[in-house]
Length: 351
Image (cartoon, rainbow, N blue to C red; front, side):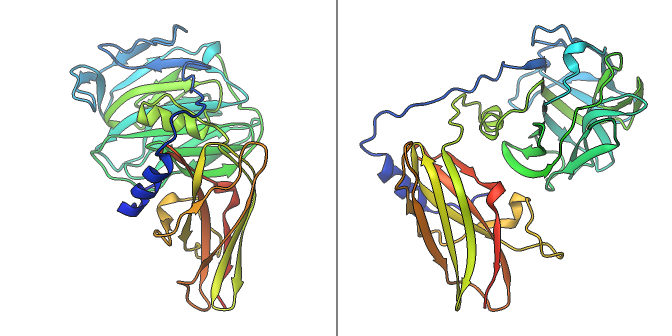
């Protein structure tokens, strides 16, 4: 999410951190559950230790996003791809995460990482400016989700997860969209995995045009904090910094009042509120690009701790009568990292 930060925000956080020398920190273990890892350091070998090495068909080594020679693969969009034999380790049935750095130069439909029998399994695709993630649950057709739009010819990290209750898609470490979903992933151990292609039962279709690097596949769903760690390279992870009980938006005369209650808080400096507009059907979108931080000069200092939460309230006075607004809460850590509470989006129509 592109955050409209101002100098005051930085000053506020710096002031809160001053004098604080130590806070408990959890560390993200990004090797736990890793079943395939392709850093493309001169080859297509699997560095996870599971032996899921790739066979290169036409793709060529090239410079990666950091300027390292022969550390990414270039695909021509015609017949290049990487083939990975099917294996038990690639057949996660309850949860999954797929992550890859990509740089597409085409707006055509194209596969990034794909595994499909005559019936669907799982995979990520792109149309150049919109990405998609799909899984087959309980043997049914695809359960799919799309990301926000982005630019061609630019590197970005695309990460998709399924945790047994929802599917989610992230761009550059930030949640872009999610949808409720449940069931067992339908898989076939004998079906290969394709990189840079939509591989259907071993047949290469919809070839990728551009660059791909640092592919990771997990047999578990990474948390939002762990996904952020993949992007930033910082292995610190503080899950569940704030346990939020509720967050509501209520029209009050010419204003909209925002109220929220936490049940516990850890290393939390305070809160910012974001506001967006609903879709044409009146629902609030999960697309992060639709929200903008409101009342940037106002920061609600945290008042809770691990043993107890707190209640908060603020008023949005910059509203127009008859207009509906969507609201989203962000909690901020003392070190400046933050988390968005997407499951608590609420809306209200100004009177």
